[in-house]
Length: 215
Image (cartoon, rainbow, N blue to C red):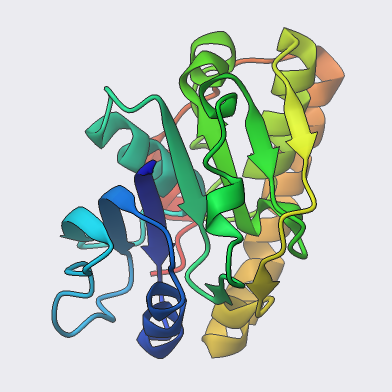
């Protein structure tokens, strides 16, 4: 069983519905985080999930903060599966995440990009911490985390688990101009962290959240 599945969404609920319809493996807790006021009804009540929670946010939390929220909300899970909303699971792919070593590793899918779906274990969180919420609302949170995993000696496994990902669905829904602005800021922030050898979680700030907002 997958202990927790975390799925943030900003737009295109039809793609989320397709993703959830493709699930063919037991899940303990499903958490869907609606960052864009886009879900009409509860998408979380699924026969394959023991429990489901739809968290409707008043503003866009962003990728890193959403991932962190899902983990913080389920602190006793041994590992978490985090997925984009705009993908589908080929038959049997989810079962391949459900492995004995899942609590000890970060396992990336074979999607493009690999961080579209990944599992992260409790031992990795203990060693590395959570995702840097200063990288808001999207991009470089994954690159930063992989850098920190490598520095901490936390295993990152590039798997061959197939995932069908419809890349850039959010940007195509009207966010390209906003991303063109915030992408550069996040890239510079990440580069500065690398330059000074900063391997910390960084952190959320009100000033940065407002400046980088897509709302």
